[in-house]
Amino acid sequence: MLVVLAVAYAHPEQLVETDWVAAHAADAGVRIVDMRQSGYAAGHVPGAVHLSPVAIRDANAPPTFLPTPAAFEAMMASLGIGDRTRVVVYDERGGIYAARLWWILNYFGHANVALMNGGWIKWMAEQRPLSSEMPAAAAGMRFTARPNPKWVATAADVVAAIDKPTVKIVDARTTAEIEGKDLRSIRRGGFVPSSIPVYWEDLLDPQRKTFKPAEELRQIYESRGIRPQNDVIAYCQVGMRASVDLFALHLIGYDRLRNYYGAWEEWGNRDDLPIATKAIKN
Image (cartoon, rainbow, N blue to C red):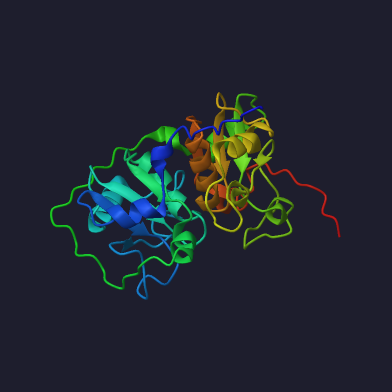
């Protein structure tokens, strides 16, 4: 009888289960971050602090659109996150907001960060306890930002990557956005030439919103010609959905990853950047 062994994640430390969070949320050195759009005050994972999903991107700061190191240091310290803190993030949509904090923490040199697998959806499905209390601020907490440019791409980097065989540009948006049917207040519709669509929700179990097993994630990317030896640049509209792709790629061992953080919000509103289009069927 043929026995097929499950392939393990290359970076299992960046994905934790709800039972681990329930057991360790109150540990010294652990900080749980709630990145839901709403509902924190009504009830959240006990011990969690809240961070708005929109707080970590500066739309007026091209070419990277990143907060300054000083601003990010102050933001993390205010949440009780220091240089040695184990950060665990969740949201209500399978990681679309949480993964962007995972990515930006890695950019600023803090790799000790994970997503709670299944997030709020799984926590509630398991009927785990909730709290409406806000944790006390951690006095004297210091976070040191150490920016690492290897994690971020600018529009110029994306232009240089178009049609380059060793670089794969991943588009995490919907088919309607890629086809230009859904502009989402962007002036121009379409996609970056030579980009490959990998919709972020295809990486998740549709009901539980947990990440698919490693072998299924590898099949998704390798079937589209995206391999571990490639440089990968992911984009969406504002860097959220792209971060889920980057998270999944890193989870299975891809290490040459960049987020085009200007994203389609920049690309589609600049007339000097190339756009490819597909015929729209009525």
